[in-house]
Amino acid sequence: MNFHIRPADGRDLEQLRFISAQARERYRVLPELAHIADAPPLPPSRFAACRVAAAVDDAGKAIVGFAAMRTLDALLYLDNISVEAGSSGRGIGKALLDEVRSHAASLNALAVTLTTFKEPVWNGPWFRRHGFQPMPMDCIGEGLQGVMDHQARTFDPATRETLWQLL
Image (cartoon, rainbow, N blue to C red):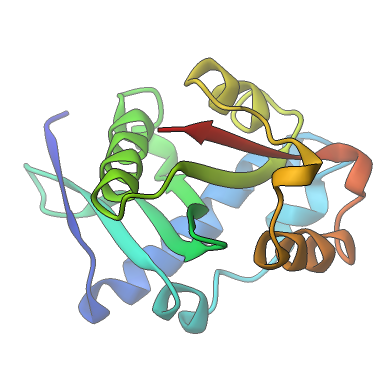
């Protein structure tokens, strides 16, 4: 599959929300995380707060993945990265991650940060394979701590990790 990365805009919102919901279906096979599959799609406000890069299939011009990112504590926070289920394993996630890194560099951010599950393989292990490492607690700023606190109301903090990649 050939694809290209472009900035998403308001016309892409429904496709982005569909992909976010579809990507969560992967969790259904994991009893301890199956409830994530039942969560609603990301709300429009979540996309509005972010710069969103869309991976677009060159053949059909459909969005097959996206990365939503925003500045948080003077670093670039990867808010969400999702790839359409049928397009998984084709390098789309890596290309989106490269776009995130490129954007962080253009902002002169020192690092890209994210929060994720320690498992399954498409979460923490995937990011660690792509160069991310656990973020030291003393480097976590107020904004990122707020994200972590918010997530702790829904997810068991013991299953989560905060990662970063210095640029």
